[in-house]
Image (cartoon, rainbow over all chains, first blue to last red; front, side, top):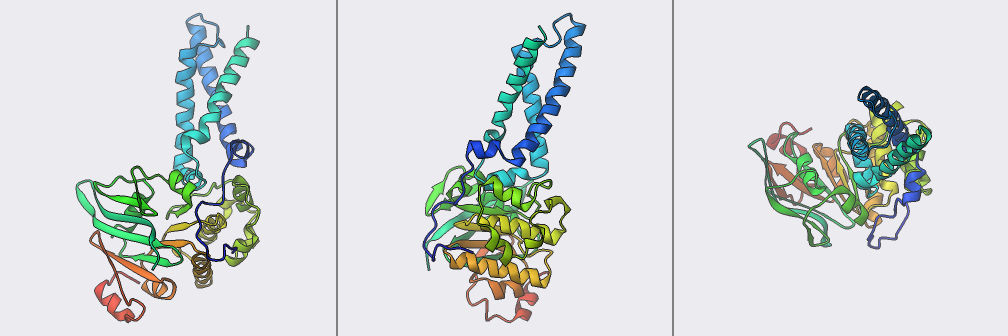
Length: 118
Length: 228
């Protein structure tokens, strides 16, 4: 194993940058699951909105925040159930930081859909 | 002896009203393999969880390079050089070892893979590996990170004799390279062959055991019949 010739190590020799994380296979797995959750959430919200005579795909901040919290909660459960929080931890990544980009994905998708559905 | 890199000092913790740890102290020093030995249920795993912030002790503190860490967490300590290997599987099942290495941008993993004998399945999904293969793969991932401290909960569990020797060799290599290795085990024979230092844990309390290599095995088994 390589080596540092016995000198003292000070920092782990890895740093997961944001760009590396966003390009990683693991993040892409979370992204795929998240998009499926977003679609399911959007369908549920559209059905509810239609029932109360609101635009089905409109961008309503309160609804979006609640839906986003639910989606992220499900992703966190997925990650913790498979102990992947340990993997992320060993890479020096906090769970909130690892899934934060998904919040942006949600907002972009919802806003784009709202514009297209006008 | 070097100063401790990681230490849990006077750790006291109860779960559901039952005392688990009673002012326990264990440390890991640079360039040495330290073993924590005790029966199943003695509190070894709980102690490790305290070290990485997964359990909050009622009393006691975690120190990193002599400084108290107010709220230890795995990401925080990993950024300082810790690798933590819990008992339960923790790699992403749908990814390969190579995918995991790409996660952290590491390309120089071939030597670690060779030492641990995992080269035959580095491109196989982790979820398709046997228990022993998975354990070796997890350890290879951690060792490839070149940690300053390796905190390993039962790293030999479920391994065949050849693989056990490969892991022991990898631990020696890590320590030789300047890392502090701290691992939990309940196999005294393995500890006598592998470890440089030994803490025993009994009833939630710990003590540093001197001269453990010279102590005959039957004495250990007489003291702790459940050890094997």
